[in-house]
Image 1: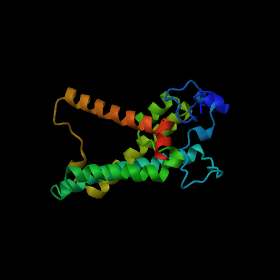
Image 2 (image 1 turned 60 degrees about the vertical axis):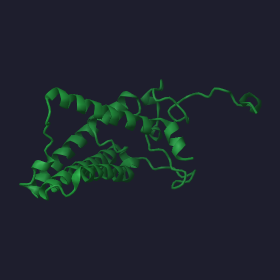
Image 3 (image 1 turned 45 degrees about the horizontal axis):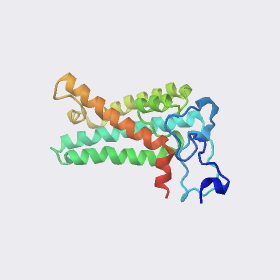
Image 4 (image 1 turned 30 degrees about the horizontal axis):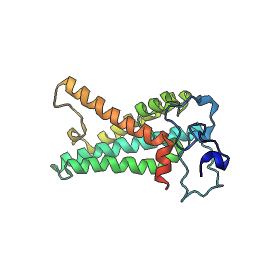
Length: 206
């Protein structure tokens, strides 16, 4: 039966909260409430009718600080330990260490702060109007300060075995910049699309 026969329009208004809505929306960020920025509801673990409590900016910034600290510490400690024990973890182990840490952090604080963990991701969300610009400075301050604290903690714990955690390019500056640019683009492209496109959420909940 056609949509017109059911009494529903064939074209539905597309908003950030509408399944299948576009990534680039014309809805202004200041016209949306807190629930527009919350993590998508899981129909299995969070039944309908249960409202997710609001989270203050202080709690969000605190969650970002803790999550970023854990990520930097664990993801950098892996290569340091690998260097200390002469390559026992291997490249795959180092990659898995960082990847599993990101997954655990997202599952732990994603519902609180969104688990950006990266200033570039925070800016990308704000640029696409999925995150308020007013919160960007606080998020970036938390992420940068957490990274600095994690580095000092690594220095205290693992000194003098720190060479494994230093990211020094082995190619030219241009090649290193191009590699970082491409990798960062892929990261932001995937994270922004998955986190903001409601069609991705709908396909995962089927």
